[in-house]
Length: 290
Image (cartoon, rainbow, N blue to C red):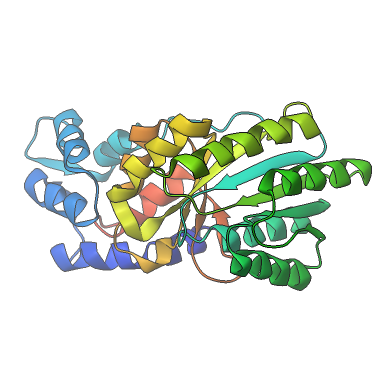
């Protein structure tokens, strides 16, 4: 697992190495500030981190880690024991949502769960076909319809079918919505309502997929989604393709939501559980002598 996180942060580590070519035992606050900003940690959070460090001009690894850990205090709530457990996955086009759903399905299947997919992104025919191909590749069932059909009906049918067949998990895709599109926002709210009609308590978890390459610019987008449907958890994709790994501090702090997974590659196994200690240690390993 540590190797996966290290792989995902390779570009962020590279950016740090450009600022600080050699590792240190202690680091001065000015250099630390430059490193954090280069990694796309929001300016306000950088200033806050520096403020809460010990008053000395130079600080040790343990000092920095203690402060960094405070930004990941938001825990994932205990998952409902209801079956099927329904994940509703939302996010804008291009964030890697459909691929992330496939990776989630693969993770569930590897843990011995029976999982069914619902292709409720009926806005784009390509999205339906992409999820169908993944379902075939992973050998998991999928409920889908034609382009422009009612996405809420697909969600209802998926949950109903999974309930009747006693499946453990359902993952429902949705159209890639821009948060300022009122009609699409209303459609998303309708999907949530219809899920609850198909099964009490569904969707059990509303997951927002954010593109890691967008860095801090994704935060306002995420806030808008949260206002629309009440997001429960975050997945960060494409972490391996960006030097903006520090943006995760801003995402966690501003949204006050847990980051549950990060995408660190294109393969079906490249969705790994986000563990703050491991994430922080990879960053600190690039700064401090072990």
